[in-house]
Length: 425
Image (cartoon, rainbow, N blue to C red):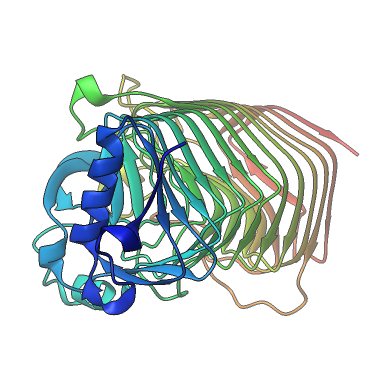
């Protein structure tokens, strides 16, 4: 295999010289020969956006660090999907489109140095959405393995419309107060395997997405055939999240053998009227959660961006059409949650489209004796909760088998406006 050392092609690795022109020329030279490995030995490489090519493996050795430039001019403006629709954005730090066989691997670090971007986001001074750390679009055979990713300007790992994606053994750390710094966000992808990762971020740790109603119809595609296993997820707003961008649908997802530590929510599914899409055939098993606010949420009244809009918040039935989201065949088993703060679970289907075929089997939840009150989900007109059991509204064919809730104030299962409910002790 052809290996190109970036130091031999002009990269300085001193943390001060802008090395992206030299590294990009190395990538292009490797591509001319049909592909190979672009190797970064130990050093600090200051770069703007890097564009991979077909059959390129970007390999960061131990001690190698890519430092994201703090100059917006080093990130070209591209047209890409961001938060559910295609729009002009700053290019990601490492990116590529319509590629085959690309990888970012090794034991090195990619530091997005996002602090200036976070502040500009808070100040409202950006002309375009911030760069993501690593994002590939419309690619096949994508591998991200071994690296440490820190301080991403926005989402950290974001494959879009990709097929056969492996994300293995990586570490992602973004500050708790960094805005929208999700960890791993596959968007309208197929055949995704996420395993053996540690993620601690300022937003959701792992989120499965498929676009919004604002996307062009020809770009609708489900996110499907996803496995998430052997991961430790800490401190994010959600551990593993589906939505709220789900207009293309999400199906065939297995989440297993993971540990959640101090995330606001554990498994979180969110959408709203007008978004459409179907979430179906989700299996969640063998999880440990410690110190989460709410282990399980399904919220079809998600109000971020539309707070106060009665079309979204109305709890009475509305007409059903293609813009009505649907959640069905979602099953949880063999899960332990300790030191839960707000509520054991918050499940709220639409009055006109109940959650359908939902089950919890062999689940043990212990409520913390010391917990402030708060909202288990982001929706209008829901009660603040503290030390509550399951709160369930608008469900059909709901099964709770060997589900234990201890330490709660009030009922273990507060269920209303639901049909075919079976509780088996």
